[in-house]
Length: 419
Length: 209
Image (tube, rainbow over all chains, first blue to last red):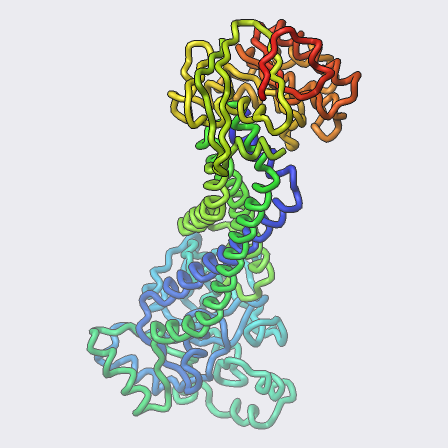
């Protein structure tokens, strides 16, 4: 009989107590695991996707919304900006590289992004198959899009109006897949990239690509005269062309202080810094994360107390057992280690179940996540989880140490004489 | 085998017990007689290394018991002394075989299932080898505690009031088993009791006043 067998058998001689302790620890560890994994993955995603983008310029509105829509492709765009104004900014000496974006369409929920070749160098895109888009209506698709939508080079598809659902398809113009990207591990895996002209062409009757807009869709459907008039205007003119936003890379660090201010004060557009907005977003989420974290720590604390009470109470019942073990030749140190081992076994099982639970929950959440951009993965393990395991073991030892010391100190002669 | 010299013990309450010197030879079977409260249990605990006497010397074989370190004393007890208590007490979470294997492990001896079965068989308990303690009757439990006491072939077998909670028939049977097992395992036997039914079975008696 090894000490492990003895402790193991004793734990399971009271299955309900053992299960309660394990459940508490698993619950606490589970919440901590989910928080740890989710915040690591979100932070990682945020950082990866905004890596080389210093500034986003778009229509006035919420700066966070602008960042979310133009870098993470999550929220709706704030509106559109006139191409002429945007072009002026693109020529500004502070700007090293400016990438125009035209959003507003989707294919089965995958966002179609109209842009130019600067986008390729900005994200360092590589092809797995085929070519980058050149002409209008040519599309290069992300690796995930190819897999999930079952698209190959040479396939054609129709874009739909809006950002999430396939309603109001643009049946007049079909996109043709000319290339598939290598997996980039960032947002471009889930995008369809095309020339800006394609997006304009889709909306020729409306002239500009637009972001949202149930209102526009409605009016479009109803054939409101407003749009009619606009259509009549010569849409090949640059003055009428619009972008959704501009992604900007600075030429020098000096620009950080000057450029955004200039945009915000002298133009009708707004500039938003991804770094600032991500930090702001995280501080907003952070309150919730902190609260949950304390909640989980509290549960762990309760679990530790529960393990302690359990061992302590059973020690009273077992004092005679332990005395008998001493008469059979077990040393004081052996009894001490038996009790510690029981604490360790309980918390170790609880922690392992908790970590598995955390991964399972995250995977379940990701299955229900609609936005493919912020999709989390429950199958990724990170080294911080070892800290959780270590914390679980530490709780086991701490909870067991007082009962173990008592077992070590017990006066067997007295216990045996009493019974 | 056993020798105690000028042993006395003072309780924390101040009450003091003095024990007459005692010499037990190898293989002898002794009765330790005394009324309850006369210090039988105290003497047995002193003999088995569970309670350090205030004064005096206790030798088991060639070993001076209280010159050993606590850990060595525990190991010595596990290997050399088998103890049967008044109430049969087994570890509830383990079955009969495991309880006996436990005694081997704690004594620092390798697990020997053959020896376990041999001992259980000699006590007619082999059919119950996979039963748990709560499934057994008092009499059966007492047999298993005897099995546990002799499993490591101790040189000294000590029983503390082994018959007091048993009826005449069972008391007689247990006593016979103890004598039989001590002979079988070549162990010296000391039975402490105030039970008059036991008296006639022994010729050697150490009486506490």
